[in-house]
Amino acid sequence: MTIAVEATEAIAKPHFRVDLLKPVFWALAAVLAVLVVLPLAWLAYYAVVDKNGQLTLANFAALVNDATLRKPYLLAMGMALGVGALSCAIATPLAWLVSRTNLPGRRVVRALVTASFVTPPFLGAIAWEILAAPNSGLVNVFWRQLTGAQPYDALVNIYTFTGLVFAIACYTFPYVFTLVANGLDRVPADLEDASSILGGRAWTTLRRVTLPLVLPAMLAGSLIAILQALTMFGSPAILALPAGFHVITTKIWSLFQFPPKPGLAAAAALPLLLITVLLLQGKSWILGRKGYTVLGGKSGEPRVTQLGLWMPVAVLFAFFVLSLTVLLPYAALVKAALTKNGVDGLTLHNFHFVFFEFSATRLAMWNTFLLGFSTATIGTGLALLAAYMVSRTPVRGAGMLGMLATAPVAIPGIVLGVGLFLTYSHPQLMLYGTLWILLIAFLTIEMPAGYQQMSAAFHGIHPELEEASRILGASRLKTLRLITAPLLRTSVIATWCFVFIGTIRELSATILLTTANTKLVSVIIYDLNESGDMGAISVLGITLLAVSFTVVVIANRLPLLGGPRLPALR
Image (tube, rainbow, N blue to C red; front, side, top):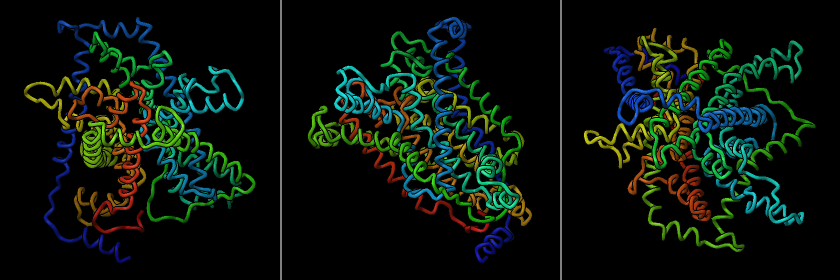
């Protein structure tokens, strides 16, 4: 009660009221326009001009007529839909088991899912190369030793379309899990109690009350998984190219090999933006008015379902999912790091090589984590302001910010890298070869994930809480700082972690934008994969993961926002 009174007194104190909302809106619009519109403008320009600078539609005609461009598009869309469906099928029951049942070790499960999210997808793809390559994969080697199969027989083969979908889903399902688990944690227990009082059984309550309330989180998480898969470059480059097929991102990358075709690559990238807009609009149509908001304090602790006889099945399901996404890949990386050239016997040779002999390690580590912290801090602030403007629409035209913030998700990172290179390689604005161009790239790439997280959080807070503050005389920005921001503390921390982890595992744009002095760990890992040095890759990957986990733990333990806390309004 004392905390709430202090917050009310802080808001109600007489003060000179200056509403800076419009200047902040225009400043934010300018920043997002520079981040998004500028590289898109260059892409659009190159898509509609030929080598002589004359207008042409030949690049778009090639997309329709050239089968080598149509097929990668179809494969990419099928891959993305498969990843979204598989991620939802894995994450939704696991989130329910963790949030609403008496499953033992629920905190451990959450921590291991976080580990899966922290793992860069390209590093996970490399781990599954170690595990499931048809000839040298550990699973296939063990199977041949166990069954006496022929040397070239394979139980599993990661170099297939199905293997690619599986490998990507292993590291995109945490998006769905996090959103669904948070949604289940916020479902008012009173609604489920009312269903039980009216005679609804546990399954009926789950199907007709709980799941409809978390449907927005399920769809939002699946959408993020689909879009992540559609625009991903690293995993397809590692697994699809050896399998002999392209998805659209690897096909666009191939268009920049000699002889480069930037116009055709730009034209191939633009339809992805249209697909994203249609997906986002479709999500709005599907959701309609379904959902709920928090008007006040908690209405009771979440209902805990007793698993009873289903306990062994639930435990086996959770263990199976975590084994495929975390335990087996991590074990493969540790084995590769502690052995030399696949020979049995433990050794620290790979660690010595990476940290004492490989000259690029120290600079790459510094560049990677400096950019990670900078991008996460700046990006979360921009996402918070953009989501507030769009959800509360205090200024005319605020919806434009949402379009700007979500547009980059449709641009493959490697194509965005080309646009940024063309934009910032002029003598008047030479940023190529510096960390600034990488910071711009990462802010642009990670803005959609941060904005989606903060937008979902804002929709869970009823505007009446802010209106009460406005009635007491606070400006909108002061209300955002004293009322809304404390309510969003958990979401802000999650967004910061999402952006940080997304930054340090980004590969697509960095390949084109890094130089010898600005190389990052992800680029070094990809370069080493070309030479097949799995030991050094594993050491760098394990180091990257260890630092990432440390940062996530510290971020979750620090008080993020100042000002009075309002636990009664969480």
